[in-house]
Length: 383
Image (cartoon, rainbow, N blue to C red; front, side, top):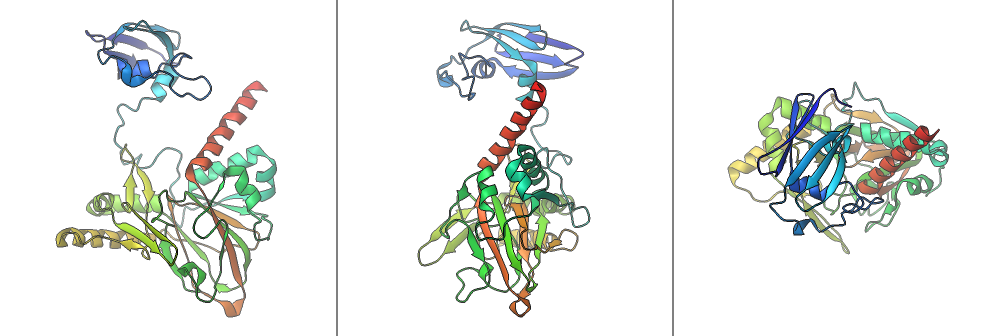
């Protein structure tokens, strides 16, 4: 695994100094003890901790640390012994990269795109239903690009549900499970009208916000009605490059979002650009229809309004906007933490536009992808 490695202990034994290929790392003895990868400390099946970490002595120390092949043999002052694989140890360490640089503004595995560089990942419905490898390829494409186009979906009202159930449970909301997106009289939401919709993320007033949007086309003969997509991660990246003050403002100010009707009152809040603990872009929010910023001091509001406008100009620009018109039997799956979507206005005189929409949460989608990846890799190794 390595060309050179050296392990030494601090004078009090409470820190392990590990030098791997001239790259020093430091680990606290207490952290190593509570993460010890043995069946006494961690459940072998789930990885859940079996000891009560808060009861470990705060002055716990390492008495010995030796490199044995590609593992560390550790002995602690409480008498515990463990072999800690270096791969696992280094995989859990993010020392030296606690904050994001210009090159890692988003988590690994994402491919940022604009209108010129967008390469939609295409998947086949039947293949993803029948073949785990095809399903994994679809989910990897979704993770990488933030959206996929699925073809061959049955043009029935709940035609997408069989594939949805292969990924995770349908997220139910106050509108039910899978809902219609078509023009109706006395519409309860603007998605049910013929007007164009500005780029937005769905339901920022919910907690948790739905992770993935599944949009299935039954008919789309109306004039217009093209879907518009913009990569919110790319927009945030460009904003930081071109107007760092605006980027900073949108990561700090947290407007509220509200949806109300006769039977529902939903409220939440959060910044338009949300960062994770490492300073990487984690989620974007944008919903002109439901945003409710507080009456902040005038100067702060002025900065926020200017920053919001700069972000809006990016997400509506030709530079970032991908236009896509779904055909009957096609489905668009979108990352609602990343993608901003909208639509062009349409005229019913040209025909009917009927789509169906549902949500699947982010955790179940990620779990399905990671488990499939592990299972298929294990199967390959065993073959």
